[in-house]
Picture (cartoon, rainbow, N blue to C red):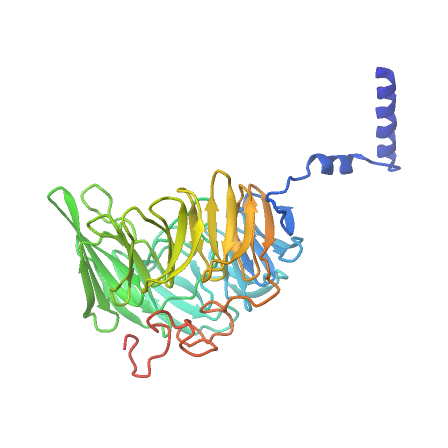
Length: 474
């Protein structure tokens, strides 16, 4: 028996060596075959070159950022389209006009690539930082530490829309999307922080430079304010307002006060006291974090421990949770929270008492809101679900331990380790959700959407639309 096995192995080796027949590649493919990462199975499943740092749906391509390279795959088939060496990558533009910015750490400049072909659309040799949005790309170049120019580009444009002077930019390794003074997103277990992709550029951005915050109008490039915080303050730019958040230590606790200032005049637009925006740690009320929130809204905690969502533009309370509820996802239109009985998650429209949908879930369920779907992750058993954000209609329901990595108009990318797969939404061939604000085809950060100013493209307070009276906050 042993002699026969050895003789058979010798024959196979000889055949493989002479090229007559080689079973080893097929045998290795069988051994290395990946198990499906979800049930029901995904449309396609591929193993990428390294563990993804980020995954983004860019039109008809899926852009996968890894530690030292970036690759793109076909959204339809998962086949690799191209691959480049790069230390960082970020996607700008909407569904119709996406581009991929790539660059190397400690090396000035970046390239803008076509996500489908990998061809270079534009090259820059001087920029030290890039910020990517659905309707805008910003870059900064510095002749020295205190002399920088900020430029705004249409994602596929060849000439800047405007330029502005800044006395420096935040120090450190800048690369893509270095931190600005805005809000921190709620995190969710098994849902990637960038699952929603790039957002539309907000009306104002706050650039931290040498302890001060420079407030820049994204429609015109004007630097509207240059503010230094007081010793007990933290500055944040949210919803077209500059917030001065004060945290004072007294009687063994922290006392908070928020003052929102008009971007043009500096006058106070609204103020609230007693709301903890979770900016301070427990040691002396030092504020080291931006407030939690999303786009134009803030998340705070009232003195009685109930969570609240606040309109950054006018200070209204848009949602206040009941005792025992836990907010797990928010955007500027709705909030998703776990019910007090920890048996369901509920979505409610902000500013009203309207319940959009309710879904049975455990006390450990997490969620994220994207323009195309609300993603809910649950444990024991491990599941992922994508729901219509307005109605709760189930778009996809998976039994999987994989993470939700990216959501697009027709489906989402899930992944586990180096394996990624595409899940197509049920009924995706029918009507799709409305195009998100700032998608390709909109005129830019100051312009209305294709259906007029009342379709939500202007933001909840119309702060993204031109003001016929001449003021942004009129």
